[in-house]
Length: 102
Image (cartoon, rainbow, N blue to C red; front, side, top):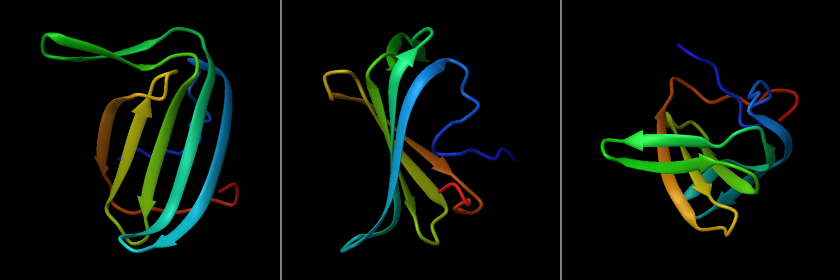
C-alpha cells in the first residue's frame, strides 16, 4: 500500500509548485479540495493509454484533487496550461487523513 500526499512533496519532476487546500461543505460533497499548480516542471509527464498519449504534467498545469470525508476514493482533475481538462483520475483508497501540514 502506498501513501500519497496532495502536495506531492517528493515529486522530483516538479521543481516549482504552489499548493492550496480548503475544506468544503456543500450539497453533494463534504471533504477537502486541493489545488497543486505545477509552476515549473523538469520534463513533461506523458500518460499512455493504448495507442493514445496525453501530457498530464507540464509547466503551468493544475491538479485539483477531491478528498471526500469518510470516502474510499479520491478524484484528481488534471488541467493543462490553458485550463482545459486533459484527464480525470480516480484512486481507490483505504482511508483519507489530513496531516499537520494539511
